[in-house]
Image 1 (cartoon, rainbow, N blue to C red):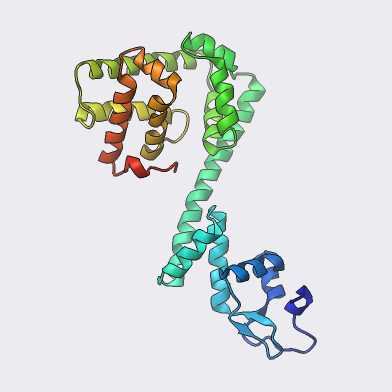
Image 2: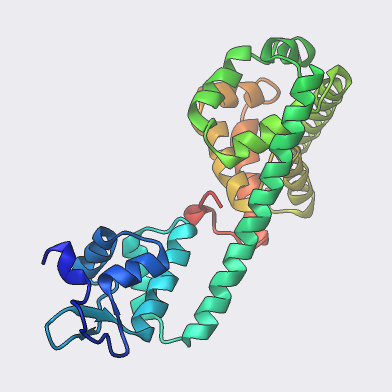
Length: 275
């Protein structure tokens, strides 16, 4: 049906519904998008005029608003459709839940905005150390190219922006502190491994939390993220060599300790996702 047919003709009443064109204007999407969602069965107009023009009723508009909110949260259309069709919850309750999700997202974006502004301020002051200067402080175990590899892989993520914002506020003494704390943590990890500390024990969990906190100084590190990061300690030869240089087998032990600690906090390592 051509787009012109999505608007009522002169004098034709809309009844209790809205035409496709008018609905598109009100919700802020294109007519083409509404046609696409209709073809997917995601949101279909539930009524028609006597001339056959499609009309969106109040329930249809409410469903459209739900789709728009879920899209804003980054969900795919297939997942959105499944959520809407599988749930019998009251629409108002769903909207309240969505409002809470959006509030969390807004709070996180506000925090990111603040971090970027701080980064801009520090850049203006010329305080930030280059990756090469960071390596000079951190010592021979740090390779400046790792920074550029990480940027190429993670440069578009919120975590990277947050990390760079925090680094931008650090001077040489801050980096020296980071090095000292990392040395102390790794020495304690190696000592626990040598003494036969079992992953999942109170001591191992405390060390895993210290390790998670060391990552958390750069970006918010949930237990699930910690699990995914720890996988690299055994799967990436450079990480494995770094930890095993202290004690052979330390990389694998640390991964086990992180996973056991995650379980203690209600996270299944086998199904952990970056969230």
